[in-house]
Image (cartoon, rainbow, N blue to C red):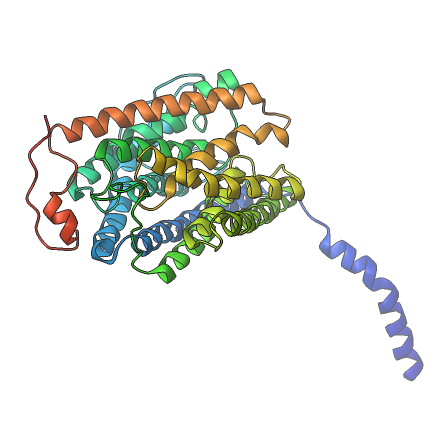
Length: 426
């Protein structure tokens, strides 16, 4: 018996590599498994975008003054609801009903259409896109915080989520003009979500105007944050949520190559964010002689925003350089906005607007399917449309219902109950 057992053991040792190799051999996915896993990825990404929006809420509530933190939180919850309904009523179909090379899709209410679906569930894609549109509204919310009236802000959010973002996104994600004419590449929304929301935020900050007493002296008056710890948690949630944003943009999760692409996206995103933070630490130490929390958060966000335009193609060292340059952008450009008296309350413009532009322009460095001319055209066209539309909508609201709270209310804090509507400025 001992000899028999030894022989069996010896045969097992020799046979096990072949058995293991056969067991681990990757098999092609079926159509059913392809549909299931890709749909689950979009649903998981949609859930992750809730964390992204929670991060925006926590960050804004943490960096504004304590007397406005509650109002910022209310605004953050409301914009998610309004953006989702706007996507359902108009926005989603505008993106995906545009003709190839066209400019405008159909104005119609979305309803799930699973007949003939073979790549992804229509409902799963709707959830991801609807919450992605809310991210742009969260960006502009931070720029106009501490002085914007609640209802006019929601009206602008509805217009942005139903018209501005969907039409701009349709030209690339929907196969419209930019995709057909210029081969514009924006995988995860560096230009279509972050810069588009940034242009709307820039227009809002200029038209609404700066906070009271912000620029009374030679230097901008420092506004003490309500809760730096909450802002840090918000930054980390945004970090995680932007991972989900990029994951949801993956067109398929049905083969080993897709899983490897997803892993590369996550690793490149992590290195870009880390390099952005380290660059921000180094530059704030040189310029300001101490690290600044908001700049460090922006360094991480800026790196993630920039890499999102094309996260799978860069080599690791390229991802780190893209992120490090983003950290430099958010550090050196923040004072430039103050110099022009553009009061960006949460500091969103450097990280989302400027790093979104940088990320879209640098895509051809690692992606041979993109061109610098095509990327520049996409950035310019998207910027011209989103900025023009935002100026028109903000101006219309300013001269009709009014945008700002009263000076007395702003000084006392937006967390007070009740508000008298100001007279429209003529």
